[in-house]
Image (cartoon, rainbow, N blue to C red; front, top):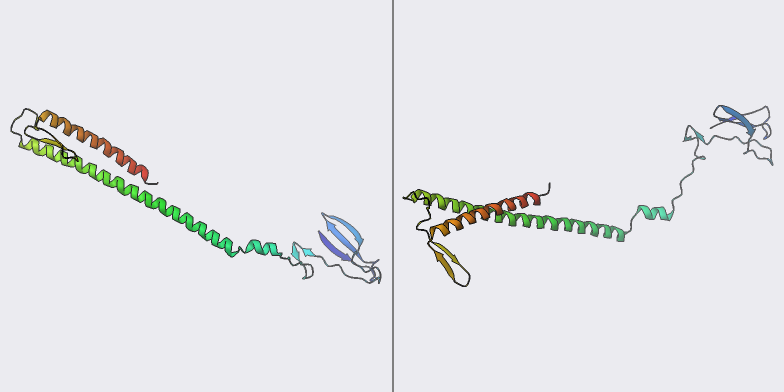
Length: 191
């Protein structure tokens, strides 16, 4: 909307009109800012032209309230609470990472122990196969299997069939457990 001042020969309030242009329709109305008691003419300045203020009188400074200032500046208590909350979050993250590291280290040690058992058992079998003179197929002939508990009780056998069955069973159990532990390690590491 654009205001245009139209003047006639006299500068009185009755002769001064303001034209209001709005969507190509022009209407003329009396100047409302004219002082009616003194009949003096006061020019009506447009407040805005193309969305910009024309003069400093038409710009109203925004009043700031105490509530707006309080919203913009958090108190020391709020700042301390925010910092404490961030520290608590960081500690929780740190604890999760430490727990993850401990779990990973424990499973890695377990994996290494299982691989060591499997490797030792396979090397033992290879040495037995190389040293066997007979071709009867049981190279555990002459081996001794001893199982001992914490109380000092022992079980000992020289039966090559039992020793062979125990060796195969230990190898199978360790191989299956190794696969489980490796899968746990892969699943433990976040993507």
